[in-house]
Image (cartoon, helix red, strand yellow):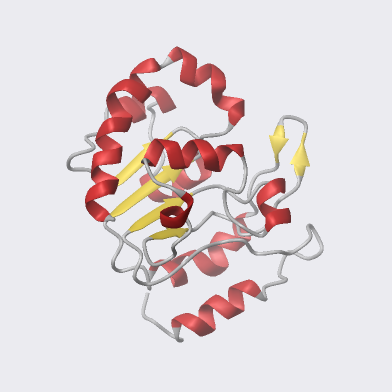
Length: 192
């Protein structure tokens, strides 16, 4: 997709978006800059991130920063790290967690934003909706898909969502922390 407007205009249009106003309280939360070298593709802001108006301003964000081996200054520097969820507003809560990100958000904005993120060297994918968009659908379950990656050559890396709700997965897959995360941290360090 070609660049049809300036980056600043696009960013301001996203922040002013009220397309889903009938279904949720609009408050777009994202972090983008055309200079970013790393893209974090997540689901949608959670309740805490929505209230703080800051992506990953919760326990998931704390864990994600530990996984990447970076501090708040690096994580929240949009010239280094873009944070582009599948939906920009908190979708609300359901019986077993947050509701799914509304598809319309990605349909309206995602390709337009990605067209500006030409400096990205590593995309980190979190969650099933971001996985389907960035990696396509495949028959591997999360554990298989994460284990079969080659972090030295892959430019798009799938991680489990860092949510505390996934604590059982982390305990069952100790190789993730001991084997995969040091490779990921080394790759992130090279880019920042």
